[in-house]
Image (tube, rainbow, N blue to C red; front, side, top):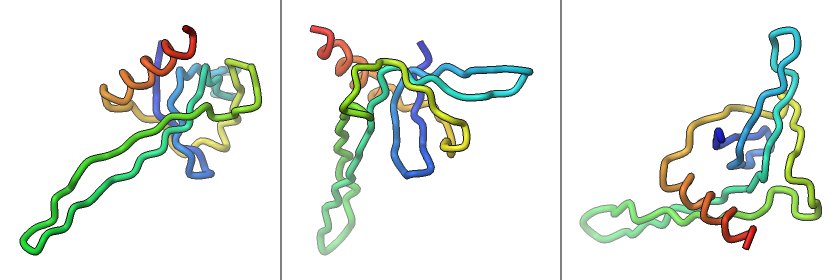
Length: 102
């Protein structure tokens, strides 16, 4: 399993198990398995003396909510970058998937 955080041209951040579709030694597409949209908000606490960075709140929701497909093909033209998510986000995503299968 290769869980990655994908930034799309739309600005959406997707956490998913990503697989490359390769043909003639070049990437033709990506398969997202159980993709979820990740939304985060950073809360800031301002005081007279200093700025406290606060915390980050994260929510997950199925990326395309009106499908039962678990694998979704994505064109490489829509992807800005693919990065390694922080460990805590991967754990939260895995817990979410485990909760969905129950």
